[in-house]
Structure formats: C-alpha cells, structure tokens
Amino acid sequence: MVKFQETQLDRTFSALSDPTRRALLARLEGGDAVSVSELARPFTMSLPAVMKHLDVLSDAGLITRTKTGRTVSCRLNADPMEEAMGWLARYQRFWTQRLDALEAMLNERRRKADPDGDA
Amino acid sequence: MVKFQETQLDRTFSALSDPTRRALLARLEGGDAVSVSELARPFTMSLPAVMKHLDVLSDAGLITRTKTGRTVSCRLNADPMEEAMGWLARYQRFWTQRLDALEAMLNERRRKADPDGDA
DNA sequence: CTATAGCTTAACTCAATGGTTAAGTTTCAA
DNA sequence: TTGAAACTTAACCATTGAGTTAAGCTATAG
Image (tube, chains in turn blue, purple, cyan, red):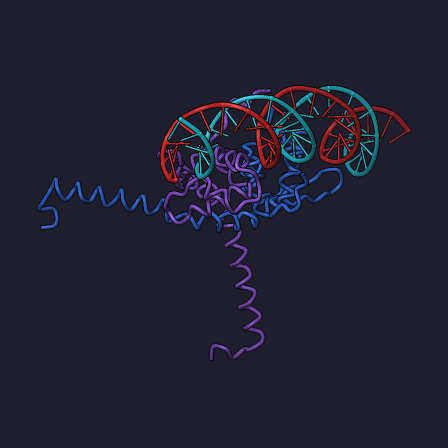
C-alpha cells in the first residue's frame, strides 16, 4: 500500500492540522526569521519533537530554513496557504448563504415587531 | 501520552488533508443529499474504507447523515470550514503582498520600457 | 418468506505520526 | 584548546490512520 502521490494540498492541510505547528506558524506571523531554539522555547516538548514539526512545515513549504553559523533561522512562507484558501473558498457560499438567511430572518422579525419601521 | 483535547480546527484541517475526503465533499457541493453507496461508487476502494472516510467527515462536522429506510443520505455541512478560512485569512496579506510586489515590479518594467506611456 | 440491496461492525495488517532519550556534529566564546 | 550552545541524527515506542476481507443486520422487492 504505497502512497503514490501526495499533493501540495494534502501536505498543506495535513501540516495545519496540528496545533503545535499552527502555533509555530503563528509565532512566525510577524514576518521576520526566528531561530529554532527560540521557536522551541515556549513548548514543553523536547527539541527533537519541535524539529520534527519544523520538518513537516518545511516539507509542506510553509517555512524556509537558512543556516548562519550554528543557528538556523526559520521564516514563514504562506504561499501554499493560498491554494488551501482557494479550495475552501468554493464552499464559502454555504455559510454566507446561511448568514444571509439569518439576516433575512432578523429583518423579518424586525418588520413584524415594528410595522412602521420604514415610515 | 493521551490526546487530551482535539480542537475543531484540528479535526477540520485533518479531515481536509485526504484527497478521498475532499473528493467526497466536492461530490456533495451541489447541496443535495447523496446516498453512501452512490458516494462510494466512483472509488476503487472498498465500501468500508469509504465508510471510514465518511466517519471522519462526520466527526469533523463536515457532513450529516440521515437514514431513511435502508439507505443513508449524506449532506454537506460547510460550517466548520468557516473557522479554517478564518485562520488562513490571517496569513492572506503575505501572498497579496507578494502579488502587490509583483504588480509593482511589472509597472516599473513597463515604465522603463515606455517612458511616455502616460503621456 | 426469502433473497438481495444497502449499509455496518469486527478483526486484522501495515505504514505514518508524534513523542521520547541518547549520542553526534559543528560553531563560537573564553 | 576546551567547553558549551545550537542544532541534528538515530533508535525506539505507542497510537492513529487507511486500507483490507469477512460476517452481520435491516429493509424492501419479488
């Protein structure tokens, strides 16, 4: 049972499914590079564990790592998220639709409660 | 090593990370309910395998199942995707920013190539 | 009433995930 | 030049995930 092709979208969603990894990305949200040890500091888990998460993020293309001296700096690359957003966007009408329905219902209630509301 | 809390976002992204499950959701995009066997038909994998995917989607709240007689109908519920979109949206500026930079660069090239472009 | 359509459950396999500890490598600082 | 800081690699473990086959359970069609 070999996994013959894993798409970018698979990797992106999979990488985002873990709270530790989302926290790491959030830490990089500022836009500037952060060292591995600094990224790991807030977590109680071991450094190798954080490293593995960084590997996953790296494989998904969500971060880039550059080594200078003995420290490795990680930087966010949000590009793969664009495709994920695009995929989700196709379903957006479902909840906006739902919100439209809610708004319509509220308008209806308002109209009934105050028949001269627009007079 | 117990998994003490799995958030909605975890389940949503995790559910979306599999191409089979995304295909199932796409099949339900029309908005109307589809039976389990009809959902399974396009796939080469066994029915129980598809069932498990439906279980995952169900646990993530992305589909609802209603049984009438012996057939079970599945319907899309896109609501959990809204939170996922919301999470991704925080990073949107990174790629729009990139597109803005691209556009700026193209404008610059255009200006250089044709200095009287706006004359 | 019986056979089958339409699921569902159970039991199993194998690979991947997410964590650990321990040991190794490279670079900088004293 | 020695030691520690900053990773990295390796080996291991438990759990989960994605698939399988086989058997079971309703509901309906004949």
